[in-house]
Image 1 (tube, rainbow, N blue to C red):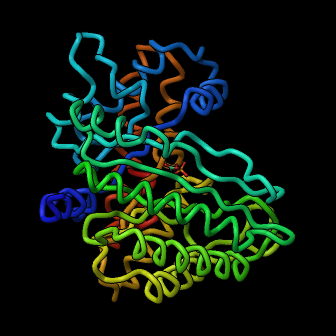
Image 2: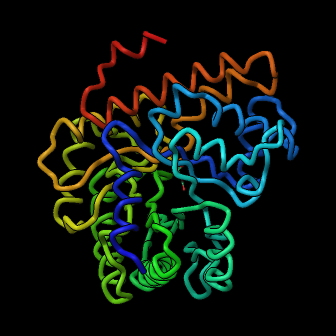
Length: 339
Ligand code: 13P
């Protein structure tokens, strides 16, 4: 493992004013997104949609890296250029989702474990050859009556650490993503407590598996109220609590934190990131690794029609620019009107 090279990639992923586009929806997940805009879920439509984003030059200037799905990393653009080459030409680091989704964890009702460690080493070799320089693995933690349990959190943290160590051994930067879901009526204090517990456990496991923290990017949830909670914390409360939890737990050797949007609205995800960067006083970069919060607007504008390509690219550029400003603590809600 060449840690200096891993660190250079991780630093590039969180470079000032740039963040990550999570375009790694599985075929089943992108179907849900396409259903919402009346687009048939064919391989060509998936390719056309992602090519549209990767060719949006202005938007990509705010994007440091793109997380691809297995199908996409092997796909070519309509003119035969590998999609990976489009990213490299835009100075964007190609990344790959390597987990294989969640499965029920036996003995732990309503809790899951992320699959994909078997054969991961073999797959990493192929992905590196194709150009991937970072990877993503998502552990999913739900909160509810009696969950998360220590056993399930430990199993998920252990899998994350095993994945991270394997990535580094193959010269690929692991995005370590423990996601506490926003679903539910829990308040922000419950999310705070669960996030602390999960992050402490994850960093213990990373230590035990000898993962070099200089060569990872952490992708956490924000500390936020449950979606169905009657009491919704303010932007400032979310920012303050998230920064406080991360400052307590995440070592300064970690180059950067790139948040998931997790079902927040586009503007909420931007406002929260901006408020955290305005607080400042932490040792790592804080940026975005958004899926839905970057793509909802372009998907709607595109709606599967080639003649809407420009409008979709403009919508994508706007969201990418807003999040770029937020990663610098320079976003203003007034700018949302400057589409
Ligand atoms: P969202 O921003 O839509 O939560 O997606 C980010 C991601 O990559 C989840 O794994």
